[in-house]
Image (cartoon, one colour):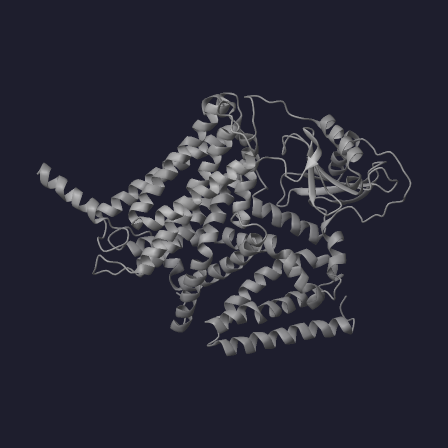
Length: 87
Length: 538
């Protein structure tokens, strides 16, 4: 249970940041215009991610999947920002 | 009928149980104190010393306070905020940050300013219990974590209830199986008020953790540019720098009238200015942002920014014509505080708030009930401990808040001549009462403690309108006749709650006497007395 709980808190947080960030930056218009809705949505997304963490059979799997998702989403966001494909 | 794997059900049942137990106590306090805070404006009139009819301040008083604040406090010339008197707030108040960054507050009665927010100790105490449990600094973040766990408890609760959600929605089965009855009550309240609970979990986490989370999101998502973008996303007036040239400021009456005029021109039926923010007062680049309410919108608070000297419009963020940032912010606040719609929305929030408190209380009772040893009178230490903690903390805070109400009135009674800090008196009364209740519950058998504390809650809550009447002469029948509904609603609400506590105390006594004997809630002595008296009468 503790493995999955820490996965909910740490990689769950990072994955939610990546997913919310991607949506905010990919929407048309500058990222500043979806700032507040993005921060509000982040909390709902994080709560969902925490629930997902407990769906995995054990802590290791939860860490691997959520951590992988976090790296992928934050990496994609960073790439899009660096290439200036989003603004 | 939705099928779920039994392992999924098992996992989420234990997630729900543990998250509920950890967050349940905090949530009970937050909901009980929050339900009262919904009426904080009424509470502010109830707690301030008042003759049955006290005069309201107007715009001229606001102008006087602003002039005095700017003349006396150089830092206020950079940035100052003020509430307009009348309507939302009974008296004008100004606030600014001094050299060390501390907020200072001034009113016409205290032009030199103080560190304490005007409005009174009681409403501020109840509000603090709501969002910090009364713990300084860390309490706010603690309640933010509680909000996150609350969200997780909602999701896991819905998942484990999902297979029977539709079938059992309107089932409330009283009878011998008490666990079934409590489970039904817990489920039906949880499901019917789910949208409200989801909203509170998200906005509660937002209000207490937003700053921390934004610091973490800034480098991850926003390339370190978040803090610079926050101002334009949340304020209406554009950020201006002082020109260094002096220019006299326009009058508040003119700017007040201009804000109403601009809102009307944008098609709003009404705009009631409530507060403003003024930057660089006395400078050529002075800006003022006037915020006010327009009914009929989910986020009723909008604002108009002017050049504070000329009254020329700089920007507007009004309902119907504002950007996504301002619309979301205004709605998130209004949804959390129930500040859209009329009095009935607030009454609904109060009822849902008390219902929420019941949800967490019943959750703890269910934990005790499902671990009950059915074949022996002696119950485990964990069950008795949980029962004691639930009774002491939850019923204790109800007693403590009612005692704080009484203390507020008694502390300002000239007949008693209570010297010293009024605010401190009220706080000490509240927290000492709460501690004594927890101690009492820890020392008594759970079922005895529950009855005694429920009677204590009933009696103290019934004393609230009496203390108010004795000290101020504003008895409920007089305030009702004079149409002072703010005062009347607090007293009437207290009376209704007192009856509720008394009813719960009687129900607990009945259960102790007639209910299942093998439980922490059974009282063998009450049962024996009952049997003895029937033998005598037979």
